[in-house]
Length: 324
Ligand SMILES: Nc1ncnc2c1ncn2[C@@H]1O[C@H](COP(=O)(O)OP(=O)(O)OP(=O)(O)O)[C@@H](O)[C@H]1O
Ligand SMILES: [Mg+2]
Image (cartoon, rainbow, N blue to C red; front, side):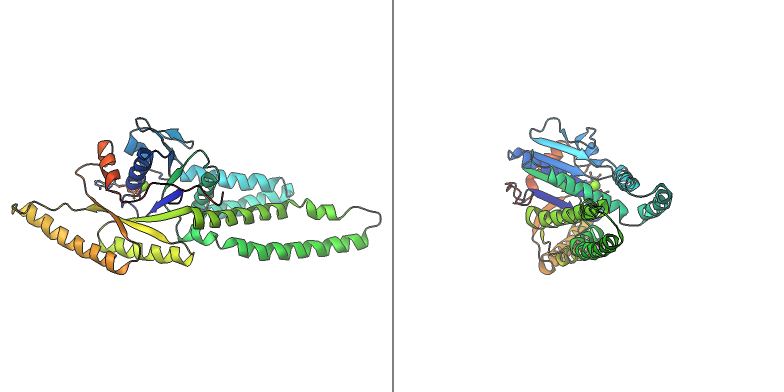
C-alpha cells in the first residue's frame, strides 16, 4: 500500500484513536512508522501518555513508532510570519504596513488555518525518507483539496505576469541609453521566483496525494456521520482522490442472547439501529468497510490500543514513495 496513509472524518469519531492504532499495527509489522497529528487538544499525547512536540519523537515502549503533534495555531502563525518576511524583503517600507494589514485579514479567513496545516503536511511528506510509513491523523478537507487546483491557475497567472514584465522591460530597453542588461531584471525577479516555487509545491502535493497516499474515513454508526462520509467521498472524488476504505468506530456491543434486562434490551435495539446504518454504508457507499470497532468502556489507550490495532483490516506493507 501507499506509504502515506490519512485517516479523516468528522469531529470526535475516532480519527486520532484509529491513526494511533494503525501506527502501532504498522510498527508491529516492522515498518518505521511516524504518526502525525494536528489535533489542538493534543490527543496523541493522551493516547500514548507521553508529551509530543513539533519534531518526531519515539513512542516509549513501541519499537519503530514515532509521533509528532503539529499545533495548528502555531503553524498558522509561522506561515503568516514566513510570508511577511518574504515580502518585506521585496517591497518598499511604505508598503509593508499596508501588506501587513491585508495579511492579518487573510489570516482570519476560513481556510487560512487549514492551508497552513496543509503546507506542513506536504512538508512532512517531502521529508519522510527515514520512514516506511507516515500516518496522518486527519485527511485534507474540501478547502485544502481545492488548493490543489492552483498550479493550473497559477500557470496562467505566471504567464500573464511574465508577459507584462517583458513588455515593461521592452519599454525600458527602448528608453534606456547604454546597456543596463535589462534581461537580468527578469531572471532575478523575486515575485516570479516565489510564484514558481508555489506552483512546484502544489504540483508536488497533487502528485504525492494522488500516487503515494491512501485515504480512509472514520465514521460512527449514526445518520449524520454516514451523510458526512458520503459528502467527503464525493469531495475527494472531485479531486481524483479515492477513499480506500471506511472504518466504523464506536459500535455498540451486543449483549449475550440469554440476557434480557432493560440494559440488554436497550443494547439490542441500539445494535439493530446501527446495523441498519452499516447496511446503508455497505450498500450505498463504494469504499469497503475495513473495520468495525466496538465502543470500549474506557478511552482507547495502552493495551486497548493494541487490541484495536488488530481489529483494523488495513494492510501494513508500504511501497516506496514514487513522487518524492
Ligand atoms: N472504540 C472506542 N471505544 C471507546 N472510546 C473510544 C473509541 N474510539 C474513540 N474513543 C474515545 O472517543 C474520544 C474521541 O476519539 P478521538 O480523539 O480518537 O476522535 P477524533 O476523531 O480524533 O476527535 P477530534 O475530531 O476531536 O480530533 C476519545 O476520548 C477516545 O478515547
Ligand atoms: Mg483527533
